[in-house]
Length: 171
Image 1 (cartoon, rainbow, N blue to C red):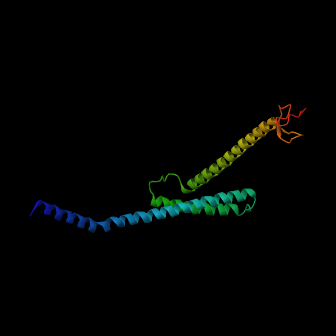
Image 2 (image 1 turned 180 degrees about the vertical axis):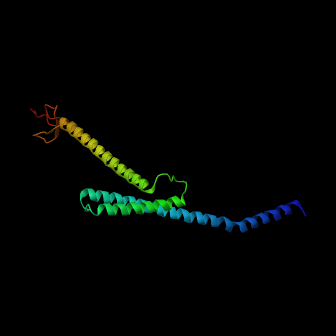
Image 3 (image 1 turned 180 degrees about the horizontal axis):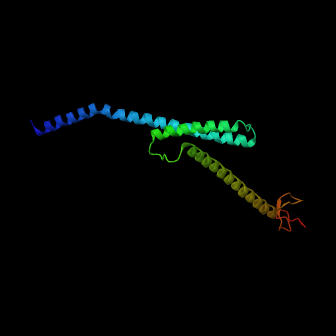
C-alpha cells in the first residue's frame, strides 16, 4: 500500500469517528441551553417582581392601597422574589450566597428607584437648559427687530433711524 492511500484511509477513519462522537457533544449543549433558558426565565420573573414592588410602593404613597393590605402584599411579593433568587442561586452557585434573598431584592428595588429618580432629575435639568436657551433667543430677537416700516411694511431694526427700503424716518 502506498503512503497516499494510508493517509486517505486514516482521514476517513477520523471523519467517521467525529461523526459518531457528535451526538455526545450536542447533548451537553442542549443541557446548557435548557439551563440558560431557565435562568433567563427566572431573571425575567425577578424583574417583574421588582417592578410590582415598585408599583406597590408608589400606589401606597399615593394612598391607593389601604394601610392594612400594604404589608401583606409587600411580604407576599418579597417572599416570591426570595424564592426566585433561591432558584437562581441553585442554578448559578457562583453568585454570592452570603447576602440573603430578601436583602438582595430590596437592594435591586432601591437601585431601580435611584435610576428612575436620576432620569427624572436629568430631564428636569434638560428642561431648565432649554428654557434658558429660549429666553436668551427671545432676548436676542427682541433687540434686533423693531417691527415694520409704516410706509412700505418692510422689517426694520431697533438701530435703524430710517427705513432701509424706502427711506422714511422711523423716529
